[in-house]
Image (cartoon, rainbow, N blue to C red; front, side, top):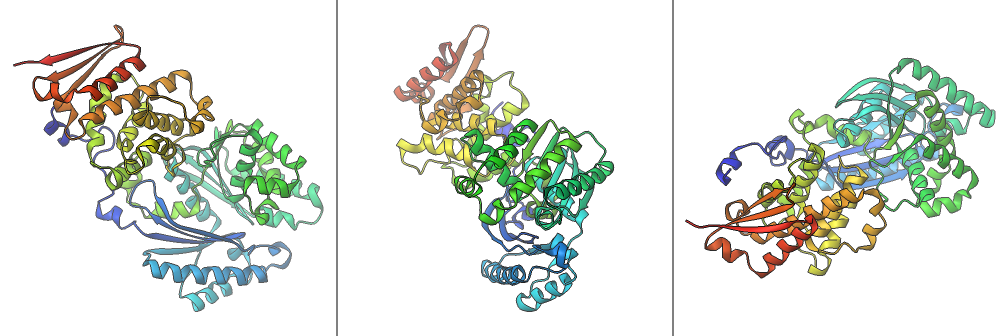
Length: 515
């Protein structure tokens, strides 16, 4: 297939990139203020790509819902702090010319007898109108946040706030039944009767919710600050080296071990080791009691952490359906290539050039090959001695959605080998166990294939050369046109081709087409 034919076809599953579409560009500065029971946060998204970047992100732990169960009103100190925070955020949003700016309030404001008065005061002081959403709406938005990161998520979303808990079914890209209940660490902390009373309340509430959510849920998707804090502690307990919370997975037995571990630790020392705020750490033991009963009632086989929740769900709400249906990883990589690469668009031709080396890979692996090709040269501004390190770190630790931890390491290793033959890198060494030996070898082949293909980056490599792979013979063949093709296959290109041949454990042949 020549370049003209290929440019006319959709690029496999996803068609042309959408980030320059006017409907997508309208999401380039979307602001959300989330007034929760425990925290008030403003996020400004650069949401033009399917996997949004956080242009601005600030949180204040106000404790607005502290004591609400006993008093029925918002915590006075928390109310003052929340008003000050929202006022600050409104000024910042105006200075950034954020549009649209959406503000929502959840359990504490909707349940407090002075909630309406607080909303009115915020509008009078800041000019910002807060939408007080229902528990079911909160569950739906949080589940949509999960779908932003996992387009094909299948399981049960659980969002725990300070004063409430929300559950929602997510099935193959759609949100199903949603329920909400008054159950959160702030509410439970003030419950008379101590631990025995808390456990009885947790069991009664979750038991009732289980009757409404009667499905079998393999994966429990956790949303909320208390769950993220618990996951950080699990990482600390296991000495897990990749501190990326999104798509971090735990087995039920891991969760139980971590809750037990929390009970044996000095909370202040644990707080410092995990970088958790004092206000959040005070609620973690109670959140641990809740998650143990969640596991008991719903019996998932896997627990996964989502960094995306209600705020991301509100962005998802504003996305056109055509953008929702896109792969968040591929769209983010396309956006990154267009912004940072020396030759935007070359990733696509590189992908077609090296694809013959991977004739029987799964669709999931082909997706990572595509992502690697898009990112293969976006770190070119780094010092040449550090480009391999930058490539690994960018893939392994960037804020990409739709990427498991094993896939992050695979992609990072491929980009490491894009710039370096040797694998030695301290940060990879600590994560090497995440990949099987076969996966590591495939990532190396991918990286070295991109390294070789980049020798033709001033041209379309598929017009100047072809790669053929005969796996049974373990033979790689490079086809070159006579004349310019032979000239381009210079000393450095020959060395890179030899390195690729070595990684494949193959013999090689160079075929020159003469007229």
